[in-house]
Length: 187
Image 1 (cartoon, rainbow, N blue to C red):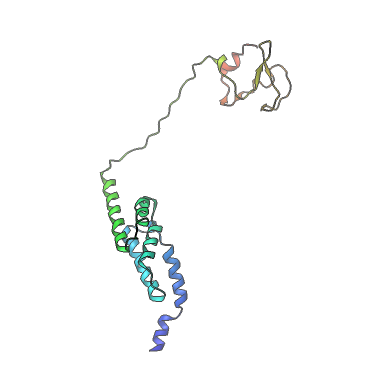
Image 2 (cartoon, rainbow, N blue to C red; image 1 turned 45 degrees about the horizontal axis):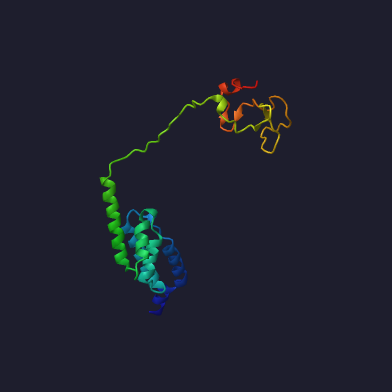
């Protein structure tokens, strides 16, 4: 009789450890339904109780909520914040009702297609009034634009030479428009 008992209880701690790991890593996403998810939690909890300490109802509910997907986040949060914590079967019923509600809602919702709206506008402003954010020009007392060689000079050119870095072909907003180069008022 003792030999038979020893066969069933050998490596009890190792099995308890493996079952504990399996219990704490149960995720709803691995199951087809809430019922299957809850059944697995209950099954593993019973196995742990057979080789180790009894798994409490509170612990099963907390694991049930911890493994839920984002779709059930709201109901899971409601279960977790209920005082006192509901029994495992009550929490299971709440989740099954939520699952059926979501199923009915998805069946009643007509299929929608997502559409992106793209709008292109043409700049109708006077080209001479558009500021060039890439080039640093300042007006001098004679009213001419002068290239500054200051800190924000992105072209790497220094000094005050004529047309110094002006027609590089790009500005902050992308390639320079053909009309922008020809409308230089001081050229």
